[in-house]
Length: 154
Image: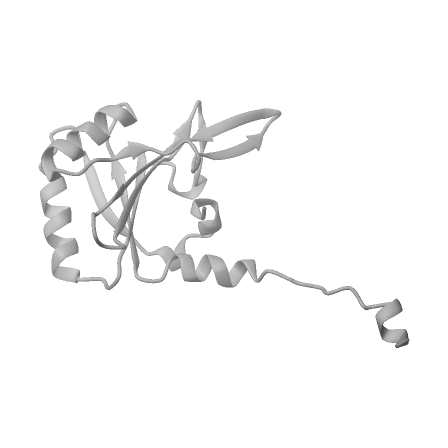
């Protein structure tokens, strides 16, 4: 009998988390939005204007523990049918705590994941959502400049 079979070496697998986070943001754009309105109302306005169907995704909700408390940051999702294009609206605050504290002046973060980014489409999209009366500001954010971008990773 072969002695290698008696004492096999355990197989060690490792996950390259940093690489996974980087790939998550490939072909993605991130918008910061200021809209002092409840998340469900904001998504309703976006759905009405853009004919989207944003829905809350409880399975994607981000939970953080800080100061002995749990905080929950909902994510709303809309995937464009028959494409791999996905839109995700993150609620950036919960009871005085922020999902991304460095961006605490934004109420929402809108992540758009594409097959291929079309800058003209992004410009038209941004121009259209600026017509939402409650929306005070929308700006594109440089994903590579965000310190804790892994906090948006799901």
